[in-house]
Amino acid sequence: MKFIFGCGGTGGHIYPALALAQEFASGGHKVLFIGNFDSMEERLVKREGYPFLPIQVRKLSRKLHPSLLAFPFFLAASVVKCVHYLKKHRPDGVICTGGYVSGPVAIAAVMLKIPLYFHESNSFPGITTRYLARRTTITFVCWDFAFKYLKGAPVRMSQIPLMPRKATQMEPEEKLEHFDRSKPIILITGGSQGSLKINEAIDRALDGMLERGWQLIWQTGKNGFQTYSSKHQDKHNVHIFAFSPSLPLFNKMADLAISR
Image (cartoon, rainbow, N blue to C red; front, top):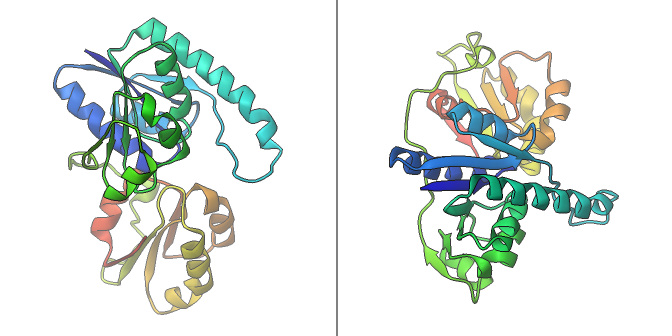
């Protein structure tokens, strides 16, 4: 059988899809992905060796913003492209793991009457899941809290799929060879999008932490990376990054983790 996954935007949407894809592929099924061009999902999917079909869709702003004017055009163009991909590859099912990137994939599946499945890892389902769950064959959720937002949809309890543990190769700049392993290492992470409050707190406390001899591995997320990496680029014993597949190894290196 053949399955197409729609996912993207954050690691929380991408990794569950990759975990499911790996399980399906190990069972002899063919797997493809649809996601945004030149994105986190494109890099991670290609890293795992799966075919990737690009679209260009934008996130719906929750505030009045000029980007709202362009949103319908990007969405319509992405739906048209997804319809083309689904007609060409003729999957037996479409699986979406949430996030705005999966929206046009799900809409195209509904239009073509292809069995559609959602997997929602968040306790509070996103817009795509809330509005389209009723059109799915099954929507899998991981938290009882999610049920009240998906009334009338075919919902079943599930678990969050995890990628199997395997040896991870660090990128050369992430080996942190300048870190002194005899001194404490603190990992700070707010996820692939980052946490505004955590980033602001670490920004204020960074000099004092470094003076105490602490070493920091700081995941700012993509939204804060440019600001904090530029501001602290000359500081030693702090590694600032937006997102990295090496995060499991960073966890292993750290003496303490600050997360959410």
